[in-house]
Every structure is written in C-alpha cells, then in structure tokens.
Length: 118
Image 1: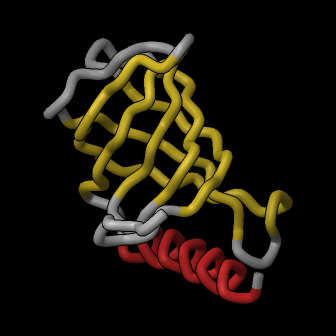
Image 2: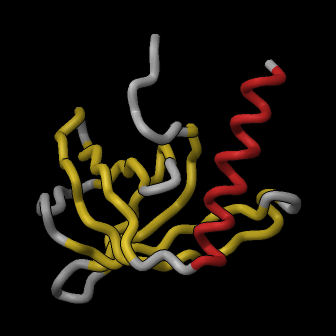
Image 3: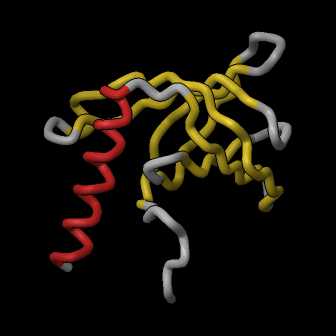
C-alpha cells in the first residue's frame, strides 16, 4: 500500500490522558504517532475541532521502558470515530516544547531506520 500522508506514522502503544473541560482526566492509549500528532484509543468521544490538554508517557530512546518522559501539550481534535468499544481520535499537536518535539522526532527516526533494515 502506498503511503499518501505528508508525514509517516509509526505504531506504538503508549499510555496517555486527556483533560476534559470539567477538569477530569480520561485515560487513553496512543496507537500511532507522527511528527505532528497521534491517533488515540479513548473510551469516550471528544469534540472535533476542539483543543484539549493531553499528557503522554513516552519511553526514552535509549532506556526504553525503564525511562519514561511525561510529555504534556495541547492537541486539536481532527477526527473522532467510534470503532467497536472505543473511539479512534486523531489529534494534531499544538504547543509541544522543542525538547518534546525532538523526542517525538527521534522515535520516528528510530522506527524509520528499523523499517529500512527489515
């Protein structure tokens, strides 16, 4: 299959949370990642075209699961689709720090190199 997206996606399984407007947190799972955003699996829907605060637990590049980084940023919901017992929610990053963007870029670079070696 030919990838038509501007930026490649990599498959991950990372924990995350979304802060709702009432201040409560909803646990989510990030299932793929790109330079500009993520696809999450969430037990409840989020409003499309709305911005939310998210926090992701991103493993370190070298330390792996032994080293976790808490990455917080705002994310703009691009789409929200019901898929079986959860919602698949695509978000675009907004306000990601340079340090955290570098971490995301490193993960994508690492996955791209692994794909090329395979």
